[in-house]
Structures are given as structure tokens and as C-alpha cells.
Length: 139
Image 1 (cartoon, rainbow, N blue to C red):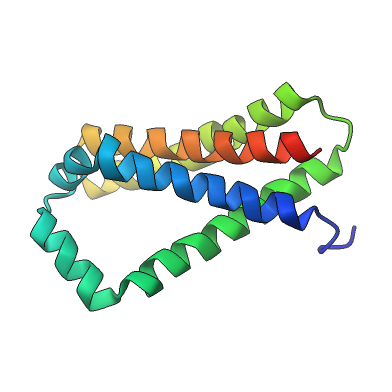
Image 2: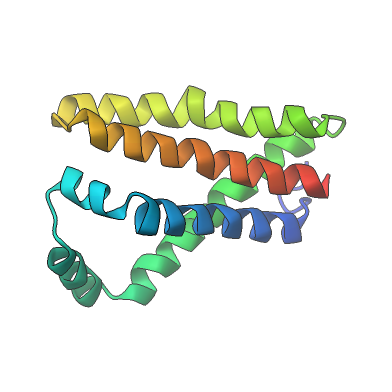
């Protein structure tokens, strides 16, 4: 299979969908709880944004979303006859079966609190589901 043989519009829009989910999830929806769970204040977060730069942080995040979306596009390209709901469930399953256990393992060894895991794990489930919805819509 050609590694570039994917629907690039779907790849970009799915990455954007995941990116938007993150903005809402870690912004108005759970931003304050997430900052409390990681032990940061709004001032601390502002300092991170100033020191690392918003373009670097959000640009890198979007590039990583593109990588995830492109990889998901290849999973779907391997099975081109998948139904819409199966594609969405597959994307959700990628998060539930691969991302969430990896995240949980890291958090167990780091001694992170359960609320942080629930916030971050929930985000990744929604992130991949949003990407799956977009990819399914373009299939």
C-alpha cells in the first residue's frame, strides 16, 4: 500500500476535529479541574505558554494529531468496506484498547491521581471518536 494513498482532506479535518475536542475538553469543560489535577494554576499555565510559545505548543499538538489521524486513515484503508458505525467504533477501540491502557500504566508508575487519569483518558476516547466520525463521513 502506498503510504500517501489516503484521503488527505479527511486526515486534516479529522486531526482538526480532535484538536477542537481538546480545546473544549481542556478549556471551558474541564480546564480548571485538569489544572488542579496536575497541580498548576492559571498563572503557571500562562508561564508555560510564554516560555514554550503558543505556536510551538499548539503547532506540535496539531502535527501529532495529524500523525494519529493519518495512522487511523491507514487502518481504515486496509478495510475499505467498513460501515460508518464500525469505523467510529474502531477509532474508539483504538483509544480504549491502546491509548487508555498505556496512559493508565504511566499514571500508575508516576503515582498520578485518578481524576487526572479520568480527565485525560476521557479526552483520548473523545479525540479518537471524533476522528473516527470524520474519517467515516469521508469513506
